Image 1: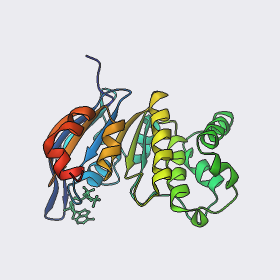
Image 2: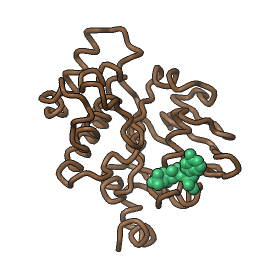
Image 3: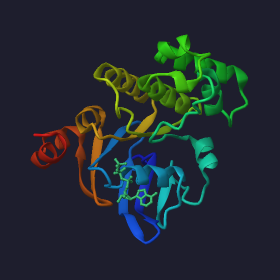
Length: 238
Ligand code: ATP
């Protein structure tokens, strides 16, 4: 078997005395989409933050492409190929679309490559091209989410961590974002996707994990989880 691109081993995170993540283990196989689903407060956002080092895990390990990266800082993980499009989007509202994209490439020096990737981002999301000189704060929620995804792509990631890319967006915008995520994945980028919209996430995902109160309670292929009576009842509103 080939090495997974990401292995999370018995990860724990505390907020003060509260144990938010109580020993989560999961794998993202190279080139695949893995969805994390679960109710509010289950620990999905915390898991992504611990992987990208927006916060420090209190125990456990993170391996990326066969290396132990548990002790690396955020920027070192970006350099290795992990990009995080965080909850709340994490874009700079007072900078233009173009400037946000440039910041996504802040560790890179290859100007021609950066320009080519900005062009690709505009091809994926033509509306961002139209709005490229506009400050991000004046974009609609959907456009801001597109910008968050586009900005994450500017670091040329091998793995993207996506936190609730569909949150609060109109159905057509959700369709657009998910069709771009599929295209990004088909170009070889692995995705670890946190979603409240379990239906859309599991349709896209090769595998999924269900989180409850900081632990993994179920795992399976996207198809298996979509068919599971427990998942249907708890997360698909049936
Ligand atoms: P949501 O969809 O609401 O973001 P989630 O599954 O992503 O839910 P987390 O945000 O990871 O869940 O939260 C996991 C647990 O940690 C919850 O009990 C939450 O209340 C707690 N928590 C999250 N952030 C903090 C914080 N900064 N300080 C203290 N507790 C926190």
